[in-house]
Image: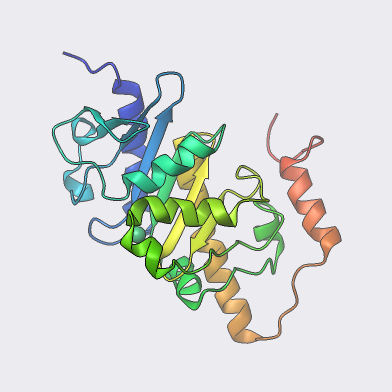
Length: 232
Ligand SMILES: [Zn+2]
């Protein structure tokens, strides 16, 4: 019998398969989830399954409290982090977590990624933020839930869909979007921005951030109300 969540699982599967394709992880690292907001369910990668063996049927469907609704495998151990974000943020339809190399390098250095160039400004109008390091008390509580809370804390005064990515200090990268396809796209963009910024800072440790006028110009031609980038 066909799953009532077939389309959601197919989209989550396809987005997960972008992780190895875009070189955002080795082995089983990384996971993507996709939300069906109307039904209040999320399809996510199962825990510890290799990408080359991953099938659509392996995807696990959970409700927003984390209860398994469909699937015989255990959902990703990071599922509670994803759910914290879905519960808190309207309009987010996909979440990605990776330990992609350059983004994680910045996360481990506990540094936001400076907005050095227009490639960055095409996607977000500020530095890629980096959360605070998790406290010992939080580590002892529900670690994965607290990872989500670390991100929420960092986004208290930010619009998640305006800045669709974050570095979790000492850990790795999270990104999201209104769809799972956009979320994985943002994960690949984050890794590329991290790589470019690393090169920039290596060549010139005192490199200047892009001037505000250029940031606004690039961000708004793609995302502003008068956006004119791409095809209509
Ligand atoms: Zn992780």
